[in-house]
Figure: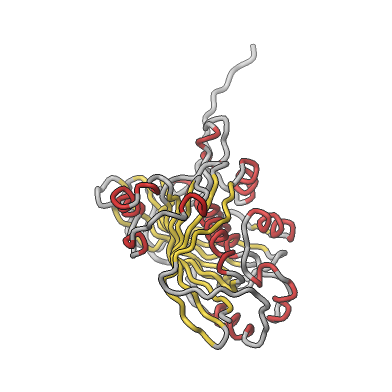
Length: 364
């Protein structure tokens, strides 16, 4: 007589919350080699407004052999390579801070990721736990090419006593930006230049969905293990969520194309509001917080960009008055929604992402 067997094992992903401590180092389970086809696919998904990411000729004039892999792609790789053994057990991805391109990264490179937990604290209501972590992306030579800080919401847990024996060196410098600026000094950039001033408010005309197949491709490519990004058997089509890194990259791409050719973007801080599902249309508007002349012909522009969900930005918002409070320093998504409810109800329920960023650009 043939027997029967019930499942007796479950594969576990994410942090073991009984063993988490400040200083804990986590190494990604994956090494990923990126080829030119992936670079092309990403550029077909995301608007890209960076000379070094678009032109082999320009990067050659800078002294590099190949185009740089896009900033947004590396940001997503740094986030996603930590999903399986870190972020899978989190409830929400709250914030990204200080996302820096540290060294040139090219098609053909192989990347790995190291994570270090830097802070653990309870939420104000005591019901959950917030974990801050540094994520560093390395190439096959062991060089750090990208770093960012991530803030994540986890179920409530008590951390273990700190036992910081980590060897992971956290890189937070601007040497690469300074190197690019120095090499670009003598290069002519043929470009239509718009003069932006502090206080300018720009409605970006580009609106684009992240389609179902695109979302599934990148969720798979980036080794995402959370079923809410791809499991159509468990979730209805309108419940499949686009990952926060993809949303942030799209919002930055939509805004960046109107500031015309950028040399090196840098996200200082970004947080998410409403979730974005597959086939939602993403748009954006931006407020210029300031500009700073770096050297003759170049400036650094400081921008806060709001990502919009399912709004045709230019025709629908051209007559709208935006409250000044929206462009001050905001701590969290709830602050945004409070302002909108009180002073701009037309945008209530439509902001999906807020990103404060800087970028080098040609001035004249």
